[in-house]
Image 1 (tube, rainbow, N blue to C red):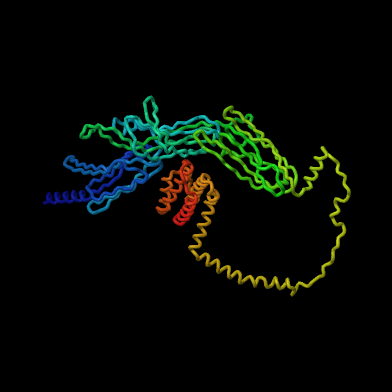
Image 2 (image 1 turned 180 degrees about the vertical axis):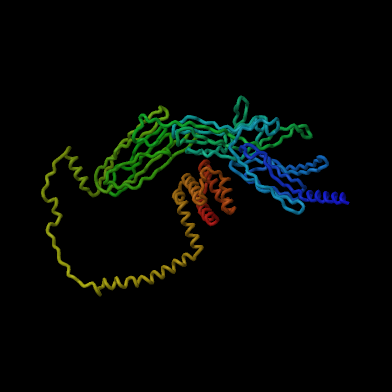
Length: 591
């Protein structure tokens, strides 16, 4: 009897342990840190069969393989072990720290979730050879190269980085590639020239024949000395590779793999400008320049305007230095100068001219000399400083009032030298030496007209303040009017410069693009000048912008790029200005 009780007790305990067996549903990653040109495998494993499996969104990654499902049943010493796994292969879309969210599955009517996974994506790394498969073939036959014109420039000397995509004859690229990491060009003044023609050239890379296209060219002016780093450009390229499989007619089939290619990190060693021989008036001009001063007219009448132009032209960092300031006689009224830039940026750097234009209005008759100016720059050809002294000019005011200073100057000039002027004693006759003052009769202030005005004036102002207060309340209650006034202020704040250049399409679109970036920087507190349009669209979407406003905003940025880099494209300046006004107003409401 005791033996039977013991057997029953053992069975009960075993059944209890079997009932306590927990369901396991876990997520794991093949690596927690990877380069942007690598891939990661994510496995979702459960120890009991489940239904309604739901993967996470994989934000920041592109799914390049999966889901692959595998089931395993094993028996060890009569004990059954079950495992079911869903596998995904992911390719990162950008650098940063990302979180793989929770996956869910239903097992025996209960919902189970995995724990989130942390993944760090770094810059591109060297990928080791992994055998003769399609991905390896693509990696060996597609290369992205960044060619630098000069690795040891002077401060503010132009260099170019040309990005070329090399593709061998063994593979082909027939679909568009995608940028997944863009260099920021920190410590450089930069301008990017996209190559939209995509002309195919023949050339050699590491001794082999390749076809290549020039993707873009970055024109850079270093703003710091020492070793500066340029981050790599990273592309996702769909590559067609011949496989060992053949079709019904014996032709080899192709398979398409997405290959991540990266241009390597570049190090630029920037040399400082020499201190020996540096002029005191040097303001940072580097290149080869000409300098001059010119006046729109040399003979005018008093109160007629003329323009004096201080101009430098040539090749160099034209947008990155200031011209010497013009000093004029005090008898000439001078308005605030304006700067005019006529600069083109090519693959060789900036060229053109910059000028400071002074508007001058003479007040008195006379002859006014404009003194020569000195302009210094660093000549890259000879690696020495050069100074140009401009020609002076003379402004002659023929008709108008004569100032005392001018009359004295004319007398001295006519005499051919310094002359003693004899005083006649009448030069102060306009000053009255005897006064004719009369006493003012004293008057009583109390109950005078001034007294009653001061007493009754504040009472008369009360109705005015009441009416003004009502008008202010009505104005604040007018929500539509408030929105319109706020929109007008936004337009005036961000688009005023673009509006001034409506008659000049090139300057208009440059001002419009700057205004749009400044608006986003003010609203989102981010730097957007180096962001791609895709990244800007993503951030607007995250901040709650509607699709229509977001699309119109990105469309305006594209119009600005087309107008700036494709001069043959026809544009409608007025329509784009109105569209920008509406987009800024809409985004301000939504953000």
